[in-house]
Length: 115
Image (cartoon, rainbow, N blue to C red):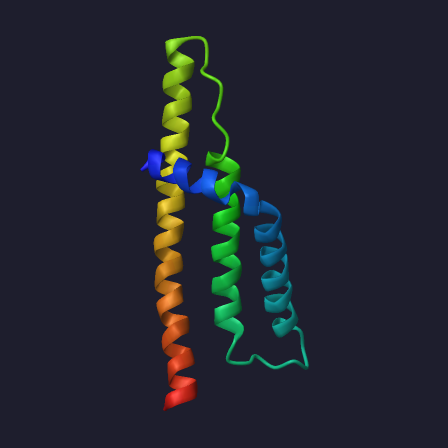
């Protein structure tokens, strides 16, 4: 799992400024829809899902994009590997919850436009 995240992070590293811009724009769009007077439109959940996805991709690039220098001792190496493994499991759980939110948003958009 770490190997896949590291490869994906290396591919996304040149796109980091664009990911940051997309994260800020979708988060601003979500907050704007929450303001009074704008009404809670049908695109509230999709903007939240998009903001979470871009934030997760940005975190993926930040955590796994650079190769860490090898620690000097075995204990530090084991601790660094354990830490990255825990981050990978946490990111996987966040992405799974994002997937369920994505399905909920997709069903809401389909219901809005087709039924």
